[in-house]
Image (cartoon, rainbow, N blue to C red):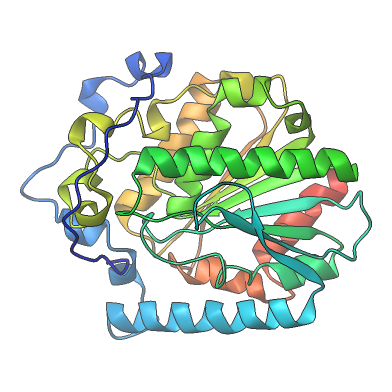
Length: 327
C-alpha cells in the first residue's frame, strides 16, 4: 500500500461538486462491482504488483530513495526558484526549475501522487533535468495532504496552482503548457481538465497543449472501501462526483488538447482497467480525436515514472516529441 497511515479525522464539510452530465452515460451495470472474490486491498496496492523486488516494502523504499536522490540532483544542477506560494496554506507551494531558459520556453507542470496523503514537492523534482536539457521548464506542484485537508480541497488547490501557472505562462509568453500527473496526481490533473468553468475563466489556459496521465486512478467508488480511505476519509456519496470517469470533457475538443494515458504492464488489473475506461470515455463518448493509450511492457506503477529521471527515456522522449511537433 502507498504508505497508508491510520488516521481518525472526519472529512470536513464542503460544498459538494455537481455530478456532471456524463454520469448518466455510465450505467450502474458498468460499475466496478465490489465482490468477495476481489481483493480490493491488493488491487489498490500498486507495490504488490511489481516484479522487481521480493516485497512490496522494498518497492516503496527503492522508489522513495530513487526519486529523492534524482530530485536532489535536479535541484543542484538546474537554476531554479523554489517554494513559490500560490495559496495561503503551507502545502500550496510550487517550484520552477529552468529559470534561465528563454521566457517563451514550453512548461511541463508535474503533480505528484501518493494517494493524496504521501510524497511531496521536494522529492518530485526528478523529471526536471532531462526536460531541462531539452529546453523545457518544469513546474513541480505541491499541495496539502489528507487527512489535514479533504480531497475536494486538494482538487481546488490544484486549480489554484494551475491558475498561477497560466498567469505565469501568459506573463512569460510561453509557447505551450503541459500537465503531467502520476497516480493520484493523474486523478488531480484529470479533474482539472474536466473543469470547464476553470478554463472559461482563465484566459491564459489557451496555452494548454496537452496532458500526460500516468498510472492514474479515475474511479473512486471501490477505493473508499480500502485502507487508503483511512486518511482520505471520503464518504461513499462523494466517490462519483470526485471520479473523472463520471466527468464531461467535451469542452477539450475545441481546444485540440492532446491527452496521453499511460500505465504499466505490471500495474494492477484495476489500474490498467481504469486507464482503458478513461480512454474509452474520452474517445468514444466525448469524441476526442487527439487521444493516446499505452500499457508499457515490463513496467510497473513506479518505474514508469522513475525512468523520467534518465536522460534517454520513453516518457521524456514522448513529451519532447509532442512539444517539438506542435510548437
